[in-house]
Image (tube, rainbow, N blue to C red; front, side, top):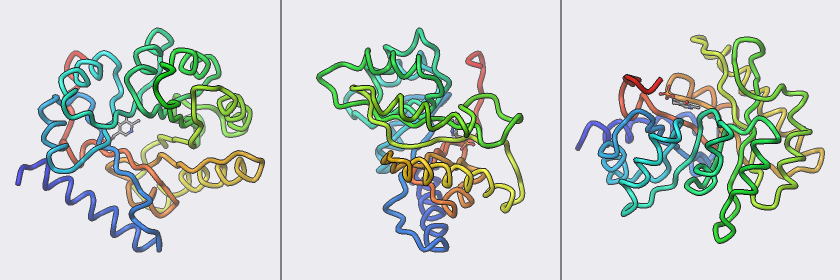
Length: 232
Ligand SMILES: *Cc1c(COP(=O)(O)O)cnc(C)c1O
């Protein structure tokens, strides 16, 4: 077995263990393998080990990988910050976008989504840790953005995403995830029908699953440490 295959197996069993503790069905938790900075060959290896969904953060790098892996057609998720000059490439090449945090970007993604493709699945990024984190809409502005996204014809609003400030203590890790879950519950009580909480990375996976994550985005624990090189 390759290193990536055995890492994938370990991450899947971590998810299963946390789901068991949370009395949740692990089938309701999608593992998104975050392949940013890693080669197309590494993605191919993970695909061959059964992994289907991959997350990318940099549009140009992602497009090259997507082209190199056309024969496999994995499910591509865009998880990085979205610049307006990249919305067309994102709308054309991805199935999910996790980091929508302003109406203008959502409008462009909807307008540029090819009409022969199903609507683009969207999560709204929420800043649940206050000053510490850079991107995401403030929690009290999420409802307005969510309603605007829900009205766009070529987007399908699925849920909320967060990248909390890093914390070591498991209890501290759970707090922002609980806040995101409660926010989704409030939005649903207000008439939306969100089914996705995109939260949890290599270091806080368990906390996220305990608080209801339905997509966990895991890079390092699958592919190893990243070398950003000239990329960022
Ligand atoms: C890089 C990245 C991840 C993966 O982080 P790891 O700590 O490597 O698991 C998850 N989500 C987003 C948005 C990222 O940019």
